[in-house]
Image 1 (cartoon, one colour):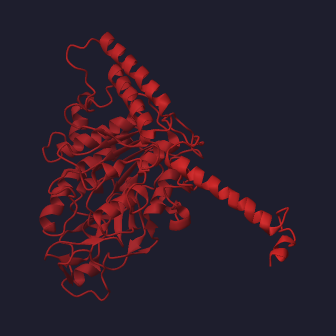
Image 2: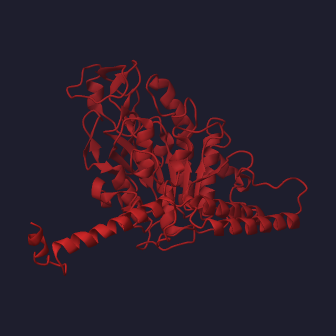
Length: 484
């Protein structure tokens, strides 16, 4: 046997015997192991991936330059707001003929009609629910997608899916991918800003705007809508500008010295860049976040003179000012009342759904109107969406359970088709059946409008070129029908 191996002919493409091939290939296993150990310890040489927020061109000419994501934590009920279902009304109280996938245990498995009327809105005739009259006033400017579906029925997993492209945690958020691909237009403001309720965090907290394994400089930066806009940015009372400058220069020198000792520490580099960014913000005395500069008419448009809408309206108006100033991605979170997932109407939907609509409807519509009149709507994508939808059956008498098989969202600006309704669900709003759109499809479409090819926007992690959309697995595609 040994003679046969030794005397065997050369293998195709390899100038030697099989024994030589095995020996030389085996020698490479140690190299692979070493590379893995170096990668684990952060000692491999840097690749071509950018590590900063310097402005970069995309893969193609963009239609938009920025995104404002109005994330509606909890799962808005599509059949009560966006997706009228007459058959659901006709069969109210009956057992559905199809099997319904539920999440909670107290579902009654009888169909629950919407208690709200629908009306035609705008010249396009889009039919929207009575709880969102302000959204109805921008019907001709929004692209309503009724055929969304996602991969999980539980809030944290579905939120991860919507924000990062996968249900499991630890991956970069969409805003991080966009800043990684394009950088930012300003050196005295972050590229990715997060505006949450000052009363607390929504479900999943800071994980929602994490940069995952992308360099930490691309993670979201929290701004406050009350008090100091940025934590710890204001200098101590009595500090002179010159003294402050000397302190910052010394801090920068020490930071860079420390960085030279640990050149591959992404968190360290991000912290240094953030400190320097904070110094530029402070020294430049940016007015981008001063809502007092807005006219009374604009403040009223966003509902700042109404205690019901003032808190959310302030965050949405701040988002407009930030993209106007050059921020690339702004993420606005809803109130934390009646819960940290305020659209999660498992029971008493007639009480809680109108409540959250009253808080968010006017500011959301005001943003589109304000961007449009300022000539910014063509350049800015507005995304209004939750992580999933609700079921057509009743839970706890007058609530609705989670539904991953169908939900609605709307987009505006940035080349999305105004006055357009895309896709559809079955007769009860349970499942998307016509022109279905996945979360990965939506991500691919948004990236394209920003000039980024979702297949080419990659970052090498654990030996694999990672993408936001992971098209080989998800089959992500650009949904051209949503675009003008």
